[in-house]
Image (cartoon, rainbow, N blue to C red; front, top):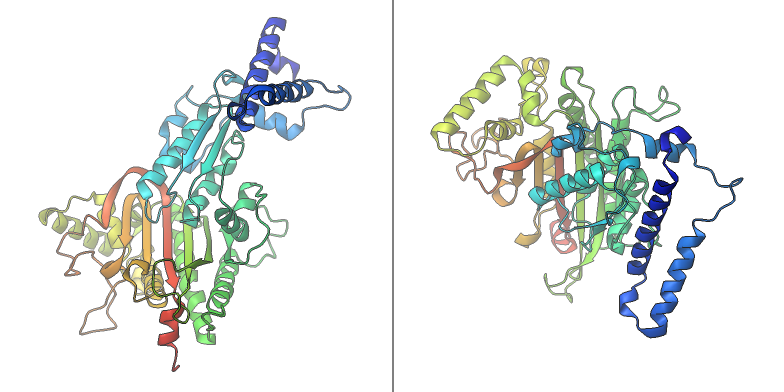
Length: 487
């Protein structure tokens, strides 16, 4: 170990002085010295000096570098689909610097992350993840401040969670509002990231759909992997339990029927099975993560607080993240007939003046009923219905008379962004044949011969290496009480 860290005596003294300088500067800032005057300021400075010097004195018999600390300090860069995908420069030789070679004189970075949400702000959220990747590649210390009061989108944190273990641990915490802390703690996302949340004391207004993850073969951390319940079954069971809790709130007073439980389990199960098949190429054995939460919030300016059930709303958010192949890439493995249909659709869109890339137009195709990357499913006329089923479920349960509160879904896959809102929230079958496949082509005619609306279907400046599905809807007690009053 001494050979790896050997320096001259002068260099060692210089490094110690630089380290002390950084620690003093950080403590002085944290303790707000600039806001004090006179003897108070001198007292704080003396306290800082004492803390810093005290940290340099230790008993050699008791103070040792822990093995895991040594490994983290000395290890080389870990490959990461997400970090390397959104910040390709990370893989350029010399761009990622080992921690022991990073500059001690550079002040710690503090990054503010606002509107951190794929749901409403996918472009800026991708840029924020890229900035985090850049900081991890070269800085010695950094803090991340999440400035939103509420958790706007659990999927954004799940994407960060997926690449968190692949970063060296230079991030030293930061600011986070209590409502956001509650969501991350209740869902289990904070535990998966190893984040301590000291402000959480109760979960009175948050109900979780706990985080469930499937890992690729050979990467499981289970000690009983051969007897474990399949992860997809665990996720669907947790989803049904969560939905029963959400609907059972006293303001709502509903519960899932046996047929409802069965339908929800099949609905989410197909979506997760598709994620396994689509994201991992020919092996059809990809990884995914799913989680969500319900939070109780004041109705604020919406409606009359004196009306029955008019004072609160329940906001639901569900995220699904898979890392690997995108929707567009997965369709390279589709049945030749489907590949031919998709190619013909792109040709029609070019003639119709569509500005979206081929990748994004292929992603639109991937959302339609019966479209699947599994050739045998196409031959047997099965598969390819999961996403439309999810959209039908969300648009039905989350409907409300208040337009601004109606369901929203955003899908980010590679460089493609699809926003499902308003009239585009779900697909529809042929009016003369309800059994026909549901389609959503994102134009007023819902026609595969008209270009998609560029407000809802567009290309992103960065590519996410996989797919993120973010779902948001409200359970409105006022609306639900009207619908189920006589049921």
